[in-house]
Every structure is written in structure tokens, then in C-alpha cells.
Length: 428
Image (cartoon, rainbow, N blue to C red; front, side):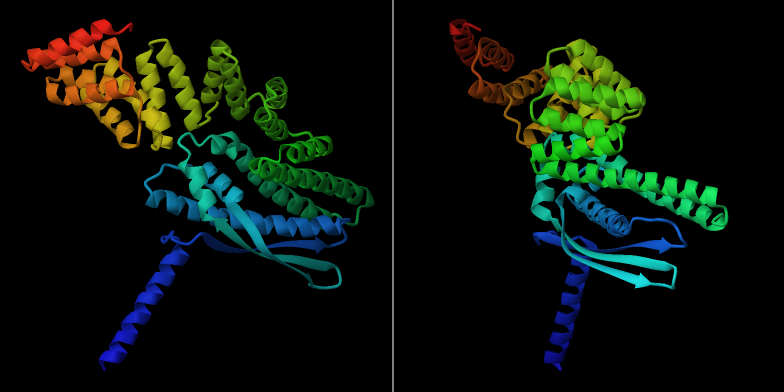
């Protein structure tokens, strides 16, 4: 009886573990398997490209797989106490997902209709997901997530548009002129769809750092279907290749096609800032924010410029928005602490400095600034410890003098005199 009970309990535990893995709550494995199916129907007399019909079926399956994989990425991020947006999760999912198996089956529904079915088995590379999500500034995700999301949405819209054209075609097939018009519309839709898939493939190549192949493919797609996101993607490629002038031209072309494309302003602003043109950068960043772009890097960069202007309240608003999107950057926490300090919000300042240090910051200024706040709170012993660490990282006159002040307020004149003497020997 005991043996049977043990076997039953063991079976239950194994079943629970298997369920946890399927639910995406166990992350010990190096991959996660995703299964998805897609379909596309050809028929009713429309002149459709059969090869492209197969690609549509596959794209439909991939889009569903990315949605499933995105949910897994979101569940992981929550378990790890990470902030992540839907656009970020879908880009990460699409980037780290590899198709292992692809099963394509045409199905004759009747004499006029063929249904193309695609079943894909894909895996999520957990290590790759770790790598992307653990980047403190999530640079690659920030660079590409909005373009990827726009292409996914465009794929869906083109699917829906194509279906509406075909439905209208079926209803009006008796009219040869309308039939030709419908076929022309289907042809344009097919061309846009094919280009859209090329844009998505070029982004995959970009994530793999195959810049020349990505550039060649996006150029081909732009020639087939000029689209503002295509210019953004090409701008990203040029930027990665260090071709800043070409990147600015691409982002400007994207804005020419769509003046409300906030992502292009954000990217162009980043290049302006790297060139030292902070005024132009700030103008583009502000425009991107006004257009509703919710980007961690954008808020952070905008806040840093305001911080440099001593516009502390505005900087803090930006930093808080950035922190809501990514709470894993110790540098951001340090800047938030400094901003709180300048706004005389001591408790919040110490809290953010401490978070920065806990996440591994070795910035001597963080220890010095926290030491100053602690000293203003009368916590002299704690301030001395912070000044000691700041001095270890970067010995200078200001840090020795500050520690000397803390010692003096503690009544420790001997150590204070030693630090004051050391400060005198320092050039700065």
C-alpha cells in the first residue's frame, strides 16, 4: 500500500512539474517549444499567386507563434520582476524564436477552393531572451521593437484587406471590369505583403548583425513597396554600420512619408545627440514624446538633457516614466537619486542611490552623493562609510574634505584633521 501511495504521489508531482513547464513558470530549460498553425484560402476565381498564398499561410502561423511566444516572454519578465511592454515582448519573442519544423499541407476543399495549411514548431532560445532582457539599457530592443510591432500589425491588416477584396470579388465576379479592378487590388496587396515579409526578414538579419545582407534585402523591399518603416529599418542598419549621415537621411525620409512617426524622430534625435547637437536632439526627442512614443531610452535621454540644464522637476518626470518601463538600470536609479537630491527630497534620494548600488553600481559619485544626503540627515557614521568607498574608487580633494566634515561632526577631530591634510595634498 505504501509503495502504491508513493507511486501515486510521485505521479502527481511529475504531472505538476510538467504543467508548470507548459505554463512557462519554470525557466531551467534552455528552450521553450511553441506550436502554431496558419491557413490561407485560394479560390472563387481570383487570379492569385500560389507561391505567395503559401507564404501567407506561413506568415499567419508565424504571427500566431510570435503572439504565443510573446506571452511566454511576458510571464518570464513578471517572474523576474521586470517591466516590459507588449511591443518589447513581441520583438524579443520574434528575435529569439527559431523555426524547427515546418509542415505545409494544401487541402482541396472543392473544385474552386484550395486551403493552404501551415503548422510550425518553433523554439524560444532562453539564453537569447536572457541576453536581451538583461541589457541594462535594452539598446537593441529599443532600436527595433516599434518597427517590428508595426510590421506585425501591417501583416494582419494586409490579411484582412485581402479577405475583404476577395469577398467583394466573389460578390461582383459577373462584372468583368470590376473583376479586373479586384485582381489589380489583389496584386497590389500581394506586392505589399511580399515586401512586408522582406522587411521582417531584414530585421532578423539586423539582429544577427548581418548588416550587408539586411541592407540588400531592405533596399529590394523599398523598391517593391516604399514604406516609412522600411526607411526606419534602413536607418537602423546604417546606424549600426556607423553611417550616421545615411541614417539621418533615412529617418528624415520616414518623417517625410509620415510626419506622425514618433519612432523616426526618436532615432534621428539619438544621432544628433551622438554628434553633439543637443538642441536638435532635444527637439526631436520632445516631438517623439508629444506623438505618444513610450520608450525607456527616449525618456531617459530627454531627462538627461533637462538634468544638464538644471531643470530638475522636468528631468524627474522623465526619469520616473523611464523607470516605469525599465527598473533594471542602475545608472538611471543613480540619476533619479541625484535629481531627488537636488529637489531636496532626501528620503527618495537615498532610496534610489541605494537601489543603484544594490544593482552593482561602482560609480564613485553615487557613493559621494549618498554620503552627502546622509550627512545632511545627521547620519554621520553611514556618511563616512560612503565617503570611504568613494575615495577607494576615486581619491580626490572633495571626497576627503567631505569625510573630514563628517568625522568632525561625530567629534572625531583626529581623523578629521588627517582627511583635511590629505585634501590639501590633492590637486583636485
